[in-house]
Length: 324
Image (cartoon, rainbow, N blue to C red; front, side, top):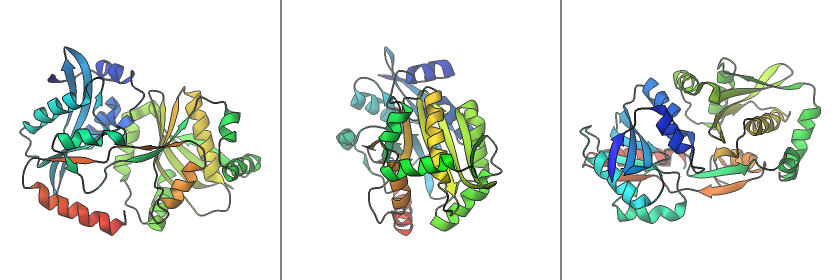
């Protein structure tokens, strides 16, 4: 197998269009977003005569160390182990002073053994969702409602009847940010910066939307959704404490928008089934809309130098502090 850089969007997105198992983290637009963030990237094609796989690789430089990261990739048809081995060999020989290679693949959990056989070790933290909640959008709206938890369905219908609730769409962050920041204070999570969010909106253009849920004219719920290649993703969100079921209607409107755009799958992003986990409440909210759980291969590290270990210790301590 041979690794070559892919320089045109049509080849990249055309290859990805043949796969159902993927997320926007391997899209051409996510690469553009990384460039806006000042990160060096490689769009690598894996060739076995013809193009058989690809991987968006991002160089992450932080105070704790430098590493090469493949988010929800690589995307491969055919022999995954052989393709991953070729990719690993290529990345190991890049002169980027990286102490390790980290991969968070969008592969089923049962494929963990491939990574162990190639010398990977478990990463101390996860980078992106490793347990996701997904919804098949092929049923009618009526059938989707019928497949929801009874309470969720009831609250959507109550919200539809409430003339004080309004759902709007925009690409402006002005009304999203206050709700997002207030939610982070309440639930004690680290927010993405305004520049990060604005760069993401700029990179994805028409494939991204900000939904705002208003109650009596005030924004009390807000979320950012990505609609890409037949898949919808619930990516960022926030909500204020209110008795009105605004967030339920906002989510339902996003699901309907995904169907309108021809999406086949609606990805609620990460969940946890642990009742003590910080995401427990949000996870129950997501699961109420119906769907199924998907367990992915956990993040893996391939050590390149001894400089990996200080990073390992820092991330391990960070994980404990955050309660994950």
